[in-house]
Amino acid sequence: MTVRAVILAAGKGTRMGCDLPKVLHSVAGRSLVSWVVAAVREAGADDLVVVVPKGADDLVVALPDGVTSVIQDPPGGTGHAAEVALGAMAGSDDDTVLVVPGDSPLLTAGTLRSLLEAHAAGGSACTLLTARLTDPSGYGRVVRDGNRVSRIVEHADADEATLAIDEVAVSTYAFRLGALARVLGDIGEANALGERYLTDAVAALVPDGVAAVAVSDPEEVLGVNTHEQLAGVAAILRGRINSGLMRQGVDMPDPSRVYIDATVSVGPGTTIYPGTHIEGRSRVGRGVRLGPEAFVADSEVADGARIWYSVVRGASVGSGVDVGPFASLRPGTILHRDSKAGSFVEIKASTVGEGSKVPHLAYVGDATIGEHSNIGAGTITCNYDGYDKHETHIGDRVFIGSDTMLVAPVTVGDDATTGAGSVITRDVPPGALAVERSAQKEIPGYAERRERLHQTEDE
Image (cartoon, rainbow, N blue to C red; front, side, top):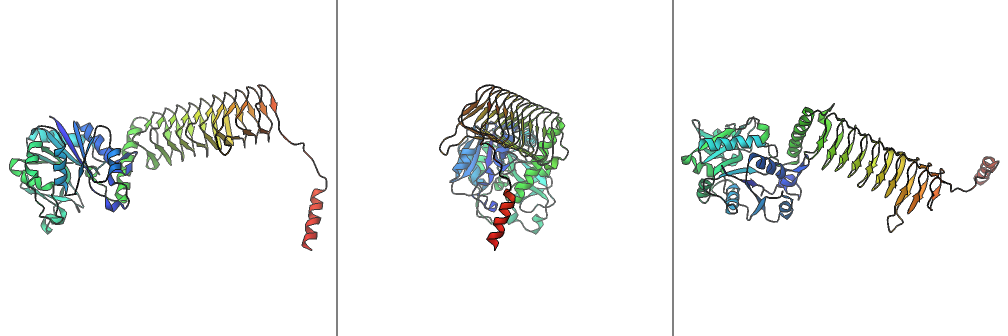
């Protein structure tokens, strides 16, 4: 069975209250339409066409590779959208066309496969997915003649008796391509919205056979029209992701407060504490401890590392590394095995060698630190001269004294030491001590003289 898919994404999403196309809003690391595309592909569709509105260039660019987009202009309803999509689709009359809304990210490939299998086995011209809802408001009602589907009535066109029906169509169908193409041109606009409804194609195909498959979990068919609904489906997707990871051996003491994108991988034996966010292309190894309150985006975290109360973006954290609390690792940071970035440390575009420590209250930018070196509290690599960035190179087994200013470009050789409070502007040879301070001077009786001067000024 050849399956081709039409994803309906031409709605303007005005209830979202912003300029971003509705289906491009993101949940758990993917746009709404990307979730739908992934499910449709996994269900076995060979050819995907997404119907978009005029002017949605950002939506077209954001579509996954291998997906064809067609513009519905002017907007004329779901029936017109399907007709536009079929015009851009190759195939034979006996192919199956799967039609899915682009704002239903909870639909699973398993449910879509069940729909397709029922359609293939039943030989009907159309098989629709239905759900029974406690509150069916807004959905088209499925009207039956006995057990047979006779038509779908949109909410806006339904009378009181029809509104009492709790079985609804969820805008997901499997059609025989030739049958759908034959009836689309005959669909009229005599309805409350003056549009060509795809649901009218179902009524037109009743003589050819219309079947229905009920979704096992009505939660799957929830769509998104508001930010409140977006938050609701995001919570469900997070629950699915977290449950899957816990089944694979990841520990989450409070999974309701853990936020992990679908694009992230986490190794078994890792513990993720509340308040942790892991986003983008992040890869987390085995036996890692993340959180509480950690934010990790587009980063690699190796086995046995610990990150807590910290922000890590575009960084590589090696095995056994300790980050935090209250550290910020910016893009380009590489921490090698058993190194440390401690309290109130910021590191940017720098490499910290194996076993080296930046324990607290330091800024390291555009720098290379060798192995088993220690960077004292208050140290700053002064990497910017107002025009350009410059590099600092610190060797192996170096001891940088507290409150050292390293004015780049500068190199501190292996086994060297800098005295606390020094401003280092020249290279330090290996094994040397570099101290830059004025001689200390004491002024006896200063406090007494200062107090007398203050009293005199008050008089």
